[in-house]
Image 1 (cartoon, rainbow, N blue to C red):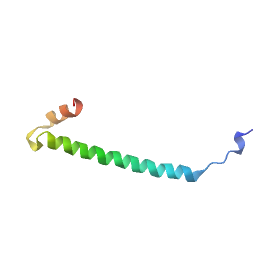
Image 2 (tube, one colour):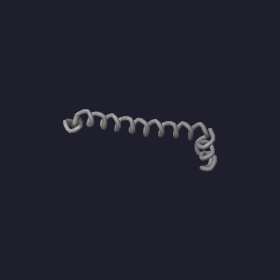
Image 3 (cartoon, helix red, strand yellow):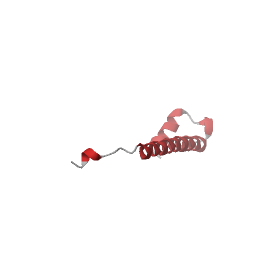
Image 4 (tube, rainbow, N blue to C red):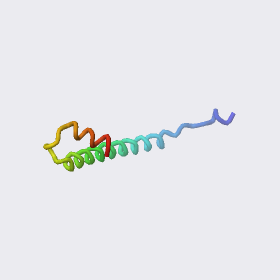
Length: 59
């Protein structure tokens, strides 16, 4: 069979996992920046947590 001669290439798999870590890290940084911007746009510490939660759910 043709599938028995399949050789696994670990180098491409490892390179893909490295990119996954960078992508996940980018999303974490981007989401924290967006949350900080939303907090500052909502008036800073003047609003309570309920108002901030409504702004997150209903843009």
